Image 1 (cartoon, each protein chain N blue to C red):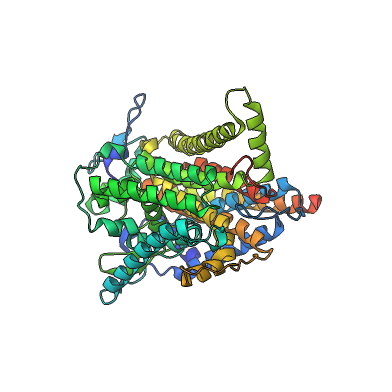
Image 2 (cartoon, rainbow over the protein chains, first blue to last red):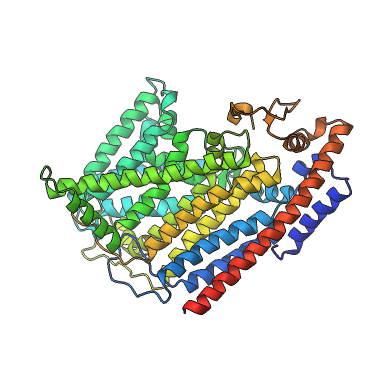
Length: 503
Length: 88
């Protein structure tokens, strides 16, 4: 039992009440809570636990960029992985001890007072829209005419450091700015739109396909190395987005089909700063506001699982083991039909899709198992939708672990290039993050999972009337989360390498 | 939750349905708990009593579960501690 006085009071209070048969059920749902202090104690305890574990498993970092050999680990790898699994298991056990409905509901749906934004909202929105459109125009123009050095290219820095890495961080750690910044949404305001109604039966599958395609392009084409290639891709993306937005109307398009807008929407739903009708409010990170129905279709779940898989995948192919696997697979497929390059592309694509299928299958079987194990009449589909929210916290943790070094090392270059886009520096400054970033990355992965565990616990208590059923329903999901964690901690501990056979 | 996400498997017959929202439940205990939580204002005295009894029973089971969970945390913690002591 967590040692905070408030939560013990709450728990024992609940027990006493039910022993005396004097419980007032109506009060269960309506009473307001004064929990933040006890919550703080919980969070501090968890943080302490995480850093202890992260310190013990002093493995090494880094996914995308670093290709240097790393320090050997001071403990055997299996022990480091077992410790990571232990952190997730222990947090799940710890969460399952908290069974006071009132407390869980209060923490999960807590929100701060609303802050009115009437005075400054509109000018700020227009400023954001202007920045978005100007950045898009500059990115395309400078991609073709600017320097072709990646770290001096406005196009590459804005695309990868800002849109790929920085903005999602701002979104899940702060709030979602993309609906304002989204240059295509702004451009569509001046174009005729809405000729056909968006076919409902497609749900969000176009966005899932779109994200898959974006990741595929990122892996196969030299978009992060040659600004001209990236600028061409941005032009194609712009044409497709404007065409889709004009055809189906911007609301339907950005809600269902545009991968970037959906990505920011999803990360925005767990963001601490939320926009309400009257202003801004603060919620706890990882909790989806109760009035938002984020997951209503299988495609929504697929999108979130793909976010998790995509980060695992791009981490894996930039390790020695990953590169070795790719080389071995390319060697095995040598049947004399395709050239080396083409076979490599087939292997990369196959691995991307197969791994996604495994990740999605694991999650879906967890919902099936959860249903069978608890004997509930809530359908497996419904269980899968309800437990998908916690996956967003996990995806956010992975994203942070994956990209924080990129942002730190390239932000000076970005500032230099962005402050004078038309006369870029010949030799932009890049930073080398210190060694303790390795431990930080491990901590990010674990924190994401721990937040996910708590969110799953709160969700289970919302879905099931019986608290024992609510606890048991989480077991399969906890197993899947432990699997995801161990896999990504393993990848974090592998030495880095350049993905083979690519341009 | 609406009835959208609810389905009774073909091989089973529900132990009961909620009189207020028609949701089926596999056990009477879960039905009682559901009524007490979701329809607290509409219950009559006997339903109220049943809910409180079910809740007390649930609380006893939860207490047992909590003991097991704390036991598991201790095993996990000391297990890892000893592993570290042996391995490094």
